[in-house]
Structures are given as C-alpha cells and as structure tokens.
Image (cartoon, rainbow, N blue to C red):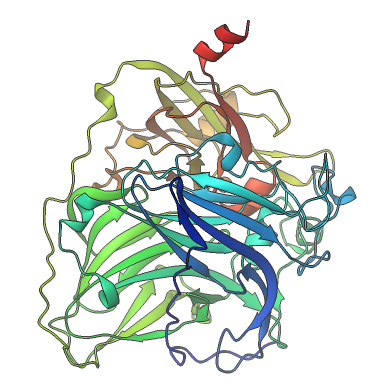
Length: 516
Ligand code: C2O
Ligand code: CU
Ligand code: CU
C-alpha cells in the first residue's frame, strides 16, 4: 500500500476565475470543456490522472452577478473509457457508452432544460436519441440572492464516479446587498472546496468497484454503499497550508465529498463566525465552535486571525473520542499566520446580515410525508429508496407552480442522509426524533420528543439538509419560478446512484389548460 503522506507541505491552490467568451445583450457566455489531465495532489505522490473542467480540479470559478444571465456551453471531450471501475448499473446503463455526462448547477433556480436532468446526459460521441453531439448550452438566470453555488456532474447512475474523477467546480453569485456589508474581499475572500479521495501507490485514484465487490468483501454484506477516502483535499491538494495575515478572512466552504461529512473545528481558541449557508447570507452572524458539514452543503464563515500572529492553526474534522489513531481525516488544512499585515483591516463583521422572510407566512398547499428507506434489489444488493419508490416509478411529488408545501422527510434508516431538492431554496422548520425500533416492528411513527427548532446556522436558505437517523425533518419550500421536471435526492453520491433519487414535477396549471 501507499505510504503515509506528510501533512501541510503543499500551499493551498488558488482556484482561477473563468474568463467569459463574450458578453451580449442576453448575458455572459462561457465555454467549459470536460477533459482528462494529470495533476500532482501532494508533493510525495506521483501525478494523478483526473477528469475536470478546462483541465482543472476543482474546475475554474464562474463569478456571476444577480440578474445577469450566464450561459455555459458544457463540452464533453472525455475519453470513452471511464477512469474508474464501472460496475453493472442497476439502471442497465452499462449497455451504453460509459462516459456519459451532464452538468447540474447546484442551488440555481433555472428552467428544467438547463438543470442538468440525470437523463439529459450526453457523451463525446453518442446520445441516447437524436443526432450525435457532445455539448449542451445551459442558461442560468441568476434571479436569486448572492450565494456560493457549485457545478458538478449529474449523469444517471454514474454521478459518484464522474464527480470522484474530478468533475466539480464552484460558482459565486454576487449581489448588491452583500456588497454593501463590507465583508472581507479580494485576497481575503477564499473559496475552499473540501473533498476526500484515496490513492494507489502510483498516484492513481482508488475507488472500490461497487457494489458487488464491496458487498462481497465487506464483513457485513448488508452494509450500504458509501465511500470515505483516507486523504482530505482542499482545492485539489492533500492537506494544504495557507499563509495568512493577522486579520479577518472570509472562507466560502463547500463539501464536495461523495459520502463524507465533517465536523469542522479550529484547533485554537478562535471561533467561526458563520455568516451564510447554502442559499446565501443568514439573518445574523452566528458564532460557532463546531460546524456539521454534509455533502453538498456550503458554509460561509469569517475567521479573525488578528490575535494569532505567528501561530499555526489547523482546520480540523472532529472524529470524536473513539477515533482510530491511524485515521488521518481528522485534519483538513492549516492556516499559518506568518504574513505581515499589508494594510489595516477595514472590513467589517456585521451582526445583522440580511432579511429572510419566513415561508410559514405563506398559504400552505399541503404536506408530503416522504420516507427515506433502506431496501435491497433483486440480487440482494443494498439499495436506498425515497418513499419506497424507484427512479423509474411514476412521479408522485408534483407541487403546483407558485405554491408552498411542507415536505416531512422521515428517515427510517439508522444513519443520516443529506437531502437536496433541485430548483428551490427551502427553510428548515424543525427536526423531530421518533422510535426506530417501534417503526421497524409495526411501521408506526411514535415520537420520542417534541420537534426541535433548527440550529442557528440552519435558519437561512438551504438546498441540502441533514436528516438524521430516526428523525423527521420538516422543510418548507415555494415551488417557483419554473415548472417542469426536476429531481430531489440524497446527496451522498453512492446513495443517489443506488437509488435514492426521484424525479418531481412542478405543474403549471395554466399551461395544461391552454393546451387542452
Ligand atoms: Cu448537487 Cu442534484 O445535485
Ligand atoms: Cu442541485
Ligand atoms: Cu443517503
């Protein structure tokens, strides 16, 4: 096996911004090419073959302004053979060229035909129906609040492998309200994409062929598909360090890992000042020592290094008291407060950040009770389902355009799932625990406690939320501004691919009437 990698030896890479191809009346146009390339992930590891956007991992950052549409042509120039072992998919897609891709911009409000529907995939030389083509142009209207979004692959049944190979990048949407707050900017606003990977001794990515091999080799074959890498990468480097000045910095963090969640902590007496979540700024700043960080979530924090000159501070992942001493994933990266202050820090850390109207004020059209369920396929392979339905079952979630609904996400498994709904930013109403043993005995939900309000840092706009084991998490969303077919799913990519994803339809009544 590969020898252990020394931590904090490579500087944190700065993710470059993507330059637009052109600007026209209808917005800003970009082109992004998915391709294979090699990159060094760590000083002592041979270069790794990766897939990425424009030959980069993470992909270049797209910076957008509110109300200025962005059009991206996503071009697939990947080889025809997958970088990773591809298993026989439960969707029978192994009959088709394996390198199918489609890009989803996570957190965006856009029309269904620009959302990157999992079945809207294409390859570099093949398409399910119609003529051969290898590119699609998607439009992002950006009529929403400033926030950190991210783009990643979403092709049916193969998302976990495509994203693991490197197909992920960040998209920063700016707005005037946020600009007026005088938060740290420029060199002092730093995006951090946190992921985990495992490597073979030759530097190549390691990923078990799933789920058949994994199920056979695991002590407990009923264990559910999951993948946790043994190496933590930030902006594509293993355990990097960043030299900082003794002042405030704003970090825009994204958990782009397949399965791994983190408990973020700093190993000093400095705390995080969390100012934003998935859908942008919170109402007010939340001082917080430890932040739970699920796949696909975004966390916007200010860290003030002004009293830490000369210190080295690690960003940690708290593994808890029972952690294996050989587990290296308790470290993420290191900040070295070694630079001298270039200019006086004139940025602010406001307490009041933004206005978020509560969706509870809206008329509520209905409540959907949706179960997260553990199951098995015809070969007894573990499978996770949403409300006991498979991907191809008829659509059951069909909110009417412009209406507000409550979705009661009921987790009947014994581990957490980060549930993501496309198109909307929702609000978390409450979490309520129930008795799982009782449920397993007779299917009855008996609550073991009252509903608990979401934590202070979960009270802003969210598009992904952790639903803990044996818990109902109630979220409220207004299904607008577009009708059409979108998806909702668990964002553990191994779950999403095995079959924890469902289509849903936002129904526009006025359209149906017109047509009939
Ligand atoms: Cu981040 Cu449906 O995805
Ligand atoms: Cu999404
Ligand atoms: Cu899950």
